[in-house]
Image 1 (cartoon, rainbow, N blue to C red):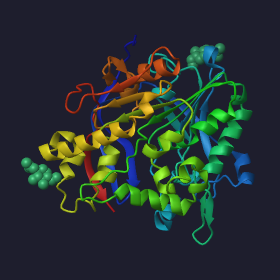
Image 2: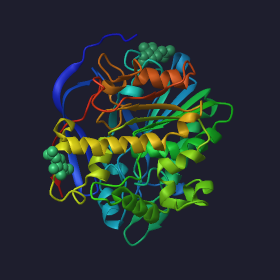
Image 3: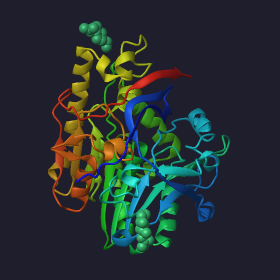
Image 4: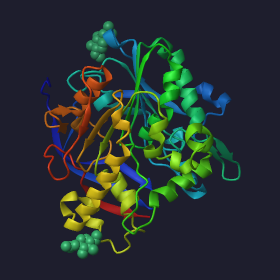
Length: 408
Ligand SMILES: *[C@@H]1O[C@H](CO)[C@@H](O)[C@H](O)[C@H]1NC(C)=O
Ligand SMILES: *[C@@H]1O[C@H](CO)[C@@H](O)[C@H](O)[C@H]1NC(C)=O
């Protein structure tokens, strides 16, 4: 049962910016509730990472935010891998290394822990008293690259950052965890899938599961008939030397870029995994399906800003995208170990935001909030295989509405 609490209902501009590809979006939302007195957690850099060459794009130390568990959660660890796009070529990586996504010099020294990271039982019923960690993302290849470009002064050390962060957390008590849960949003969700089996191997005898929140990036055809995201991922994988860190069983069968797409990767993940995704993932709509390049006349512009503005043929196209997503998880969902929650919303990342994770009017599917669904699945209280009916049937969505876009 949810305990009611005082939401701040404001028309706020979230500090959520997607900067990659050629577009940057500012999100404006009405009625997005924010946590009252959110827990603030400081940044810890990982000094031992330097000797391991586990550095951010610009060579600075990687880091994380850790809030210790207590009581019945003292021996349980939740790891949240931060998201934030990717960089696919020298110029986008050089840009990125001057931001918090590529350098700890620019990271916030303190961040809010809300949703799945909250320390309040009324906001986060199952994980509030666990050790909760947010690992900062500063490589640009979902914690999976390996390489170096000396001329540009770029380090592609995502895989080493992953390892260094895990080693550091092991030394801080994770080695004796009874329960562990690896999660992530967006690029961090893809990282959570990519590292799920490694995470489980680190913790033998521990109950280990993984969660991907908005990580179902599809190798889909865009509105112009092109393959925007495939080209983009190809750049990321090639530039940052990702292939060596992908499951060999996959790369033996297909090209490395294909193995970076969950639809191909999932078959090679052996640990229990929960896929949470909006069927009309707005990041994919904006950055993969209807980019400025694929839609030069801007026919999709209004639909990208607000789903209420999509016309009939656009909705039809998006239903096709949803069908591809459902196809991509068909085999995955046959395993009883796995969990699934695909709601028919225009959203992207629903675990860290309090309003979508667990609140009075947060999204539900099969009568369960996201927090309840994820908790039921993690603790084996119930199987969760929830697929929503197609848009516009779901009235519980918190659809993202965007004010404008800036081009640069
Ligand atoms: C556990 O955490 C809660 C809330 O953060 C706090 O009120 C309580 O004192 C803590 N208990 C222990 C034993 O540290
Ligand atoms: C809907 O938008 C598409 C562009 O995506 C356009 O080609 C089409 O004419 C529009 N349909 C209607 C009925 O306005």
